[in-house]
Image (cartoon, rainbow, N blue to C red; front, side, top):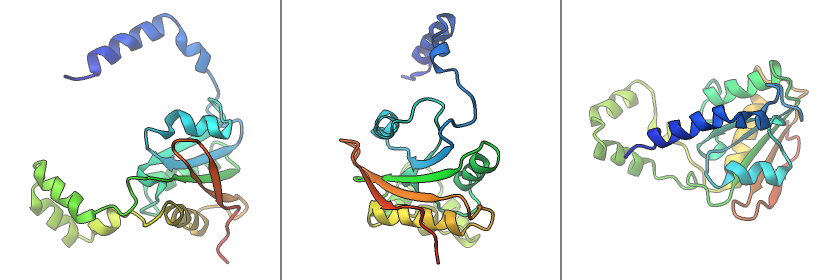
Length: 188
């Protein structure tokens, strides 16, 4: 059973009752920060609360593991837009303990593609075209490693301004305790 009918009914009431007014804010982040973090459900409300970030304070970019897999992918594009168009003056990369991307089994995931009806020829064609599943589905051995990978990729990006600091953190997804991995890391 789909969640769509319940979601649409709730949304209709939400709009009719003008509940949205509590969330009105500018598209420009008040705290001038962009946050690259994981899509983990435990972080949706915990992370902003643990950082004292309110609605409208920051630009959040979320993906699996807070990991940049491509220098010209959508996550990096979002970071660049946040900095150049929306006024972000710092970037935070925040991974978390117990992330599903830790030691991700790429071959196991490729097997799941086939189990869900994806033609193995599609994967083979992608591989033969230069799309490497081990790179596309890249995980990491620790949250710290994943954070540092993304921090370095941002700092080294040819379009990223050198004056904008990039910081790396790991958060505990249960308590919200934040560990600073690197402050304003710059590749020498």
